[in-house]
Image 1 (cartoon, rainbow, N blue to C red):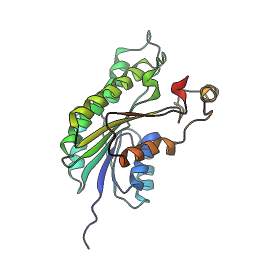
Image 2: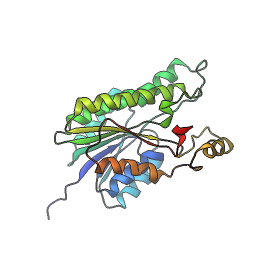
Image 3: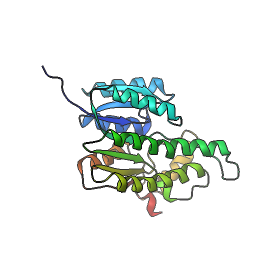
Image 4: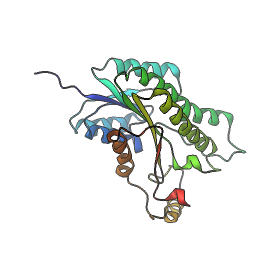
Length: 242
């Protein structure tokens, strides 16, 4: 019996939170998954089992995306797989909390290394492997268009990632499409209290957080509609109306 051919999707930060949702959504669409994680090995193991239960191949790979050598190692793992890369989802990110007058240079640099530099380097290398076309999706944030004083490095890096999305879309057209997804309130940050989260949610026009499935549906939409490139799909429950 001939081996079944699967298109391959690389999902960074795929072990948990929204990265997990993107990996599962792609698996349901019939993609083999290269599941990147950094420190979250236990969560990665659980997600690998969930993806595998959907009947597609899944391969976990550990990498520090702030390190160029580690990125090169990740793509060596990718090249060893018997599948063609069709989708890259740049979901890995950090969100350091500090007001602008207290934010350290190292925290600023760390946020930009993972939230902006890594997607750029990953897109460069992914594009070289998408000779017959593909899709790159950068995960930004509705906060990219706001002035969140408590998260300056995060919001500025995500705003820059939206700009990078447009640059990449123009550079890699027509074969490769590049878009972004900007989620609103979906999963509370670990440093946010339940009371603060409830206050933020109650301000929304839709008065509830998104489900991870609703955010992942934006990725499914971008997979199916091949006439969209250079765009940021905002899924925010009306947050941007405030």
